[in-house]
Length: 115
Image 1 (cartoon, helix red, strand yellow):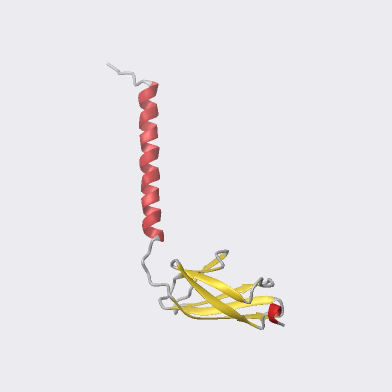
Image 2: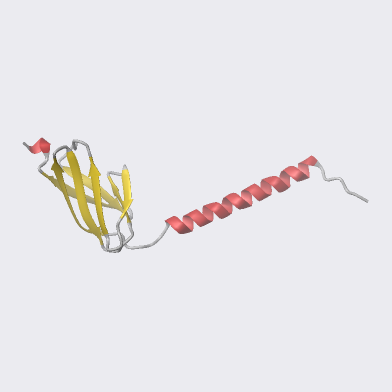
């Protein structure tokens, strides 16, 4: 004896599976990206040299994410150092670094706007 499963039941089972998979993926992503590491920027220097904006710095902990003006994101290396190199003319004589929700304003040496 075979039982026939209605299309409505099949749809519900498929929807339930997709929902469970999506929730599992969201939980995994949340756990991976919400590291509570201390990404405080210990020091940072910025300079403008021949059309290139160079921002160097160091985080307290290694392998932490740092963002330059919320446009470029990179990770500090094994000892916590990071370097941004961007070919652009700054609109201000300072740059903003973001790390773990904290904001750091760094003045630019040789700023073309100050001459």
